[in-house]
Length: 111
Image 1 (cartoon, one colour):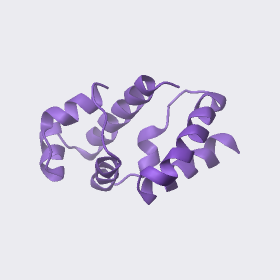
Image 2 (spheres, rainbow, N blue to C red):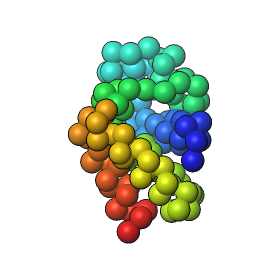
Image 3 (cartoon, rainbow, N blue to C red):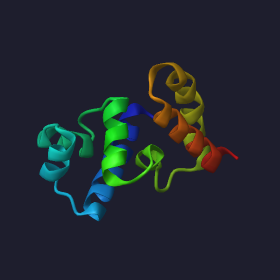
């Protein structure tokens, strides 16, 4: 799975959870104190976000971080390689919440 593909998954999931919560892009941006254009760019896969922003998004929408990274119809072996690769990096560069989320993805897709 490429970073570009992951951006599309994250963006689609963000939009879905935002809509389920009943938030406009502007409302979510206001809650997070970021630009509505930034939310739009994330949802369309144009921009990436920091692990802190990812954690804040999850908290604001009442979901776990891993829910943003969960592909809807990707075979387990495709995401398995990403999880193994990213987990090693994540342990040293991102927050504990992201590491927990990656471990949850590993549990769901690799076990």
